[in-house]
Length: 398
Ligand code: CTP
Image (tube, rainbow, N blue to C red; front, top):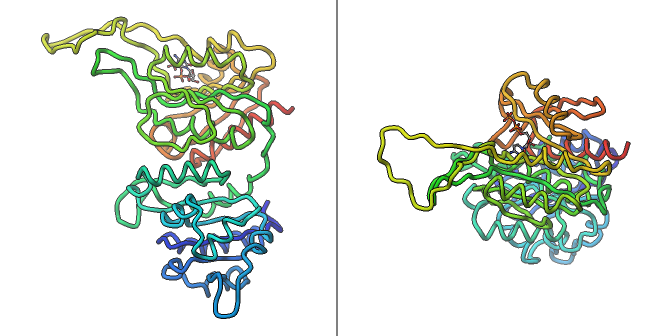
């Protein structure tokens, strides 16, 4: 897939810079041609000699030195894609601000090729509002982001901020451009996250859905050119949602109305939200006081959003549902496909470790109403989103 691709790799000062050696080796093995630029800080983490030897090209660090000036414009023009991995918090903020105090930034600002960014930093830095804002800016500037992963960080803490593994980066590069523009002119509707069903002003019934899967699908549909409306339940994570039209909802009923309003103009609907099946029959106007030893509450069914859209769907609209199962997975997914009149059903089995709620990874199988079936490996949710969107694109272009 990467044979003959010219990749300009920017390496910045993060502990994850040691992975740049593995990345360069893997890229060369894939048949890519690699040139490396480093920041001064990156040299403290990995030597230019290592990367020059592995890439078979001299490594550039300085914008100018004595009487030589590095032609940053030509480096940017040479590349088919500029990849910055790892992208430190410092360089990330400079890129967002348009600062230009080293060669890597000069190349970035003058690059005419697509730019893929692979951030790596401590979780608190990653979640800081300044970093969130900078990420939104970088997405709005058209950069492609390979999301951070969850795991052990250099600080010894566990959390979000780890640089994506080289194989994830290579998968992202291989897919780059494959489906670009294929959904131009299409309108997509995606639901994500849980719903909260209010019991009283302070309590609710909810679930552990993080919204990560649905958000990843919305972003992937957007990357392929679709105009995307994301109906998002109450999630605790902050997401980069630039380019998406976001409708925030709380309850299943609110999600139902938001989806039904948008559906008429929708070409592709993906219902990835974990909608509560039941809601309190009555919402208490004041906080319920604890009195009795035991307490019973009457619940009523929520509207089934997917099913309602399945009933109104025209032949030109594509409807994708999710089935979360713990047993008889294939059978249950196929029956949901029929019962809800969906075109495609994505199955999540909670029996697969690393799949389902709360994780950064997922493992899915996909079934369609023409009898198609596909089983995917465990991947990052961004990787799974790409698989699902690829499946959708193949399905509608048959
Ligand atoms: N769904 C929906 N509205 C609901 C419940 C579910 O639109 N009130 C959608 C989900 O977004 C998902 C699909 O239906 O795309 C299947 O959800 P799932 O929870 O697996 O199944 P349920 O229909 O709720 O059935 P059960 O809980 O009995 O498995």
